[in-house]
Image (cartoon, rainbow, N blue to C red; front, side, top):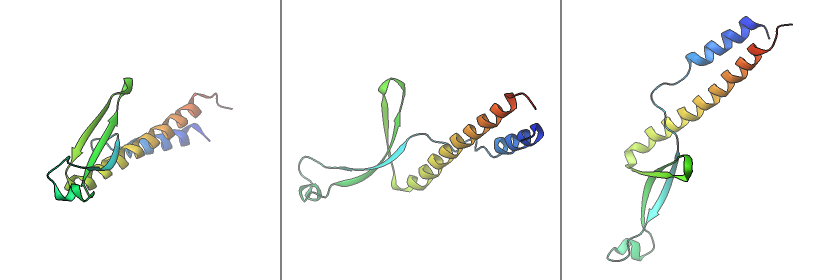
Length: 103
């Protein structure tokens, strides 16, 4: 691959990077159950809740409860983050090619 072609590919990938709507973590559906006084929990059904779980260095994890109407937005932002990570890897690979001596 020629240097100019690599630069064009790299610049095209960089131009496609999402900027603000990014979110790292995992979207989970959990069920909470009350100890007593809730007929739904007494039947074993419980209450479904959405949780965004984010892991940090040192083994720390943060869980953020979400409202049902936030689910689509959070899924989109998580997808954007994964796409960003993939594009960054591809840009790095192209930069590796640029570091090699030209034939």
